Length: 531
Image (cartoon, rainbow, N blue to C red; front, side, top):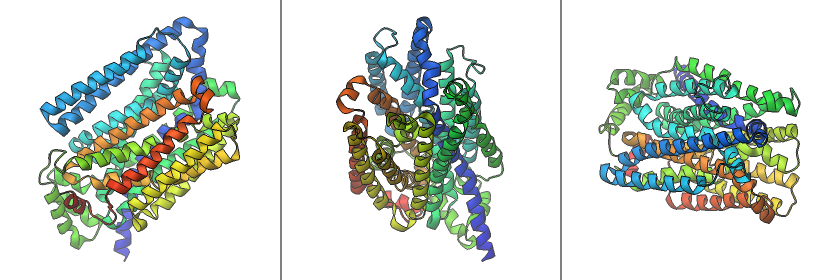
């Protein structure tokens, strides 16, 4: 019994270190929520009194977006080539590039004037800029995990987190790029986003590959717990920092301390990663079977270690199998799980919660306090999901959660539309958050870590990249919808929430119709299911 308890502690400690990647994922993406108003005042509103600098910022912003779109298009083209082969992949890449150029032309064909639409676009891109890096990190995650390993990939993420925290807090002093300070800030946020993208794929992958099947769902769910815990921590940090001065201090200096605070967990993560092993599956991929066997004996039943090793060896017999080896449905399910997780609007709530509460009439400090309440509800119901995901299964939680989010978003939208914003609106937001936290938050990551067979494990990067692209679309477009004078006049800021409600309905239908139940199945059994 003592030996079993010791092994369980060892697995839990490894999981704990890996979940720090999730904590930094949550910390890095949510830290922006407390600084939205300050960043707008510091970087964007000040442009109205300096027309020449406004023109320079708009031009550099457009060039940055063009560069970002081209880089993302090239990265996605690499996925197309891997997915469809050289000929069809090249055709798909050309179509994607033409579409990207058309979108850029339609959006940037006007003069560099600082109007409402341009200001909202710059604000949305600045707030969501980390997501650009997340897309790149998600796409690169498969390559890095395969070539450099799960552990080294996480170490790289920790270094990027540290660089981003320092650079985004003092973008003027760290401006080695020769650009406007807001663009320097955006670049450092993108660097941090690459770390988030890597961690979003590699942390659950690492946990899934060291965890016994019976508790794998619970352990992978701890990664989502860490993400939400990281968000809750940064909500407290932001609130505490906001109390240290008045509104003017927050605009000039307070937001800098919010970003700089990330250096503490980032450096801790980097140090702890030096003491964890690689996963057994990656060791087998590197022909280090003796090390893999010894690790399997430390992680589970020594008597079954040889059998588990044989299963891993067989599943990796073809190391570089085509990503469509198991058909296109698997890839489609992975992509749609990721897209719907974002299209239901969760990161609008998490990134823009203080702004939403200000629209309800709250002051800055009160809105940040209400954001803490949202984070606490998110954390509480994530814990509920952790203890039910291996009991009730993945599909029931996903379907119930999607319907709960849809109802809540429709109700929140109507509260704005009918101008009856108040305590009811806060309840709808908390109900929405609870529904997401007990379902699509943790369970989506569990499913993504389980459905991809070992020999095409890198294909998970497609799903992760799709998730961040969807996140960028939602986060970038929300200010455009929410701050639009035309939409506000018609819908009183309720329009966006109705869109997210529709997505919740579609997400429930998708899971019911297409997603397989993975509860209790080993990774090798999932491979047989797809075969």
